[in-house]
Length: 195
Image (cartoon, rainbow, N blue to C red; front, side, top):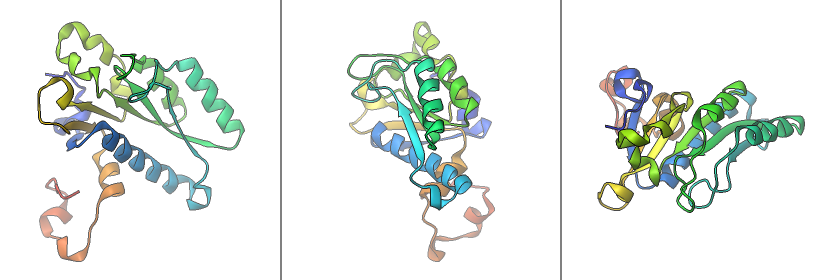
């Protein structure tokens, strides 16, 4: 129905989970991206990672420009900072701004940056074929969230989150005490919904 790339679906190695809000979804993906980056750069550099988004990203931003993103990344790298996460928007709540996903994902790929697509507000419109062009380039993103409660008449606090690499999210957010371990979960042959 949403025409997402198969890389976001179970059949393509991706995964999905319901969150309460896109704020929660962004926090979860930001945590996963941060943990991946810290694994690479070491905890001694914990103050160097940088996040990018427009001033309209979730309840506040106009579209993010790929040139502005590249310029900010290059400036931050020169300053010794480490870019690791960018949040693009399909329909900012305050302005309905839509970021150019493909070009932004291309810039992020050059610097190995996790891209999250915040489609909380207008993302629901992509079920209509005439609005699917807003998804162009989403295959370059790592995660995407959409608030079903805004246009799909579900109960409040129903956000859909899709990720290409569910293991990153699970690693960052799971709690695995001994008393919850079992053969099925340890084999990785099942989806352990507690994570």
